[in-house]
Image (cartoon, rainbow, N blue to C red; front, side, top):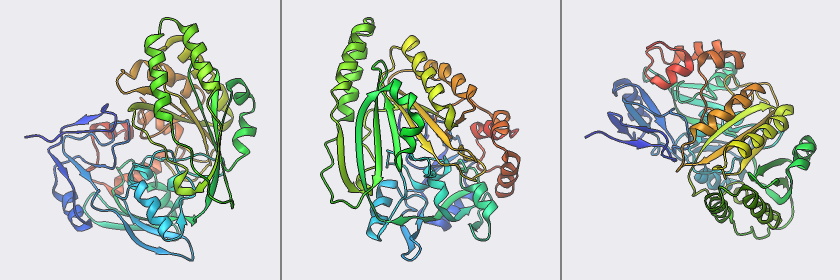
Length: 426
């Protein structure tokens, strides 16, 4: 009987010969040497690209999880790659540390978040991989390799964003910060004002992001700043209820766009502002129950408002079935070779579509806009690019591919999908 696997949204499926859950690094190394290839590693399945898809072996690291060690003096923590972000937050809080920044989903494994360049928002805050101090992997021949920022900086930069293809990540040491509190504020403003004042608004806070609600003309802006104030209650989260309302208006009034727009605009303008203080681990993540598929592109910072304006116009003219908000964030530049934020301050724009609908028409129409403005796709979210495209987007692409070949000379981790990404003939 064949095994079956699907990602969180159900868009990507696989029927591998084997789904393996090794208990420790030794068992993992044996698996890499002997299991049917290609071997692909799965975290929480929150990627929307076929990175995990394999007819060979899918490897889950869910048993290779937890804290290995920590250093209070440097705020470093060594953790196993299968550790989920939700667990990691509580582990770090328990030792007086905090992640400097987070995205809004805490279900991913840290290995998967690192491998796909997952990120939060803030023009001076890097993605998770910028916290790497040491990396341990099992290479394509089942050998354990350790890299450190001190002794192997190029290898850290080459393997920090690895798409599960530069060995199997087993342990990492993260450079964290002392535990902290955030003041989180949220309010609504016209999208025209947001686009006009984009750089001022995004740079005016430690972390800032906004969501544009299609057909409303309004954005919901979220700002987070370090605070020494006392903790106050976090308001009840109503994102899921809001999505349900937007979906209902989309369905019932699809052929009455002016009435639909007026109702959405009225509802969004009535959204209550928020202002609260909480410990960091109680701020970043949101509940995400309604399943969706997603495309996210990382653009030069200054191009963000122009690209978003075009995406909004495209959506509201041609795709009345879309109701999910568009998410806009900023990310600091870094030195990692396959990081979408390599050497440039970035504006990230994410578009979403209900998992019950075919996402391809919308995503295919939007992608040329993102590419026109020099966008690099999020490795874990929908895109159509191949090796020839990436070679133009990443200055150190060839060097990264040379490191990949050294780590996996027999292409044990190369699937048909990743062969297309890397330009490997099979």
